[in-house]
Length: 161
Image 1 (cartoon, rainbow, N blue to C red):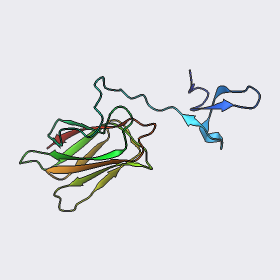
Image 2 (image 1 turned 45 degrees about the vertical axis):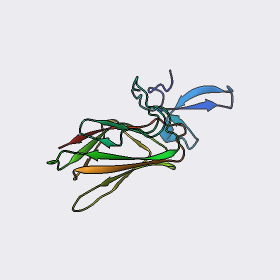
Image 3 (image 1 turned 90 degrees about the vertical axis):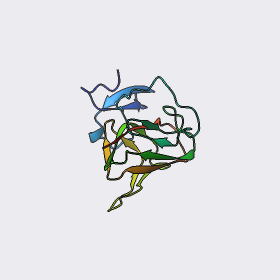
Image 4 (image 1 turned 180 degrees about the vertical axis):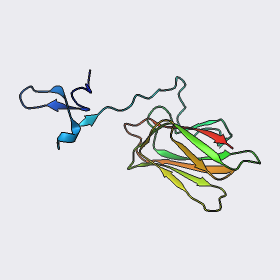
């Protein structure tokens, strides 16, 4: 099984003596290109349809996802509105999965009201369980993907407090 963590955290293909064989090695001691294992992510049994979600407004407890999640997100853009109750002070977003291309895919979070307005721009990968709290009663999501290749997209749970 690769990688074998007793030998090294990374794998490479040996092209010298033993052609096209996978080998383990310690990434920190080499300047050669390498691959590292990714944490296994659970993939939901229910897949999302292509295109933007039909529902554009989400409430506390709802899961929000990228186009075609958990399949690679197709190129395109969607807008979402996360709305809390009348007495909502904060919205917490809990990341279940966030795996998008850093170069070409962006989730832009903009609070509708906040004294010191801070936008969040999410791209690349975030660990499951990462939380972002926004001091606002609602948050506008703008998702834009120009690539979607070799990634799963994202799924985020919204809670209003």
